[in-house]
Length: 389
Ligand SMILES: *Cc1c(COP(=O)(O)O)cnc(C)c1O
Image (cartoon, rainbow, N blue to C red):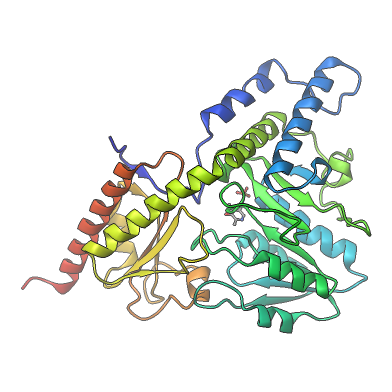
């Protein structure tokens, strides 16, 4: 039976996998030691558990354990990566390149740097959501120290060509940071093959707990140093002070391990469900537009606009589907997203849009239920707009 309301908002957050929770539980009441306690068994036990998690997170992205710093999530990782790198490299150059469709935690961190003496170039994207590599080449200057491009977009699921982007950054002596909050655990990531120097990920987008995340910092020569943004006891190689969130870190580690093991089968399953959803909508409704490209996209993401429907009305009518809705039209009362704006999907009469995020608990039956609900609601709203005849 399809549960109602039906959760299809897995880009916003995911439930903790029961296998992850089971791993975490002992670290609250019994194995509660502080990994910084070097003189007794409680500390050693917690330290070992953190080491295991570090190796698990590293394995997901082909990093080494020493390259993983634990944080509170992707927002903190993005801030540490951008501000930390900018501060430590400011004598080499003061130019940063990022992209219009980035998450606010990247755009706002860059905005802050813009007020602290850095110059920020925000690249536009093409209609498919991808950046134009020639434009990136054109934006690079001898002053460019950092390029920040997300691995997968949180609204339209676009997968950027990181390997090529990293190669361009490196040719110009700049670092590549990627916000992989949506991509990690969902599509293969190899920091070596993809020329990534800094990578942010977070537990709660990959069936781990909220409040636990990581930043990958490449062990490079010359050594890549980040200016810490939180000072204190020198935890995490001095990059991020503060007592470690051991249960959260243990959960993050186990969550990344499960994702790595199950990725091939799970991503094929989700892609099948996503295609079933799109086909079902297209067969029964006209005026359905996919936002972003289907070619380079997270397997579990679908973002569609429905012509002739108002965002607000759709949001009200679709109550038993937990999805993210928005306006694809700038005249509505709902502000259109900066991502839809950037791909040029916001236009007069653009209609309403829905982001579907499918996940580990989504079944074919759920997808069929969602199709029925959306078809019913959109048809009736279009009828209402047309008025009685
Ligand atoms: C969710 C998300 C973040 C923020 O992660 P938190 O762990 O919630 O701080 C950053 N970037 C992207 C792309 C996200 O989807």
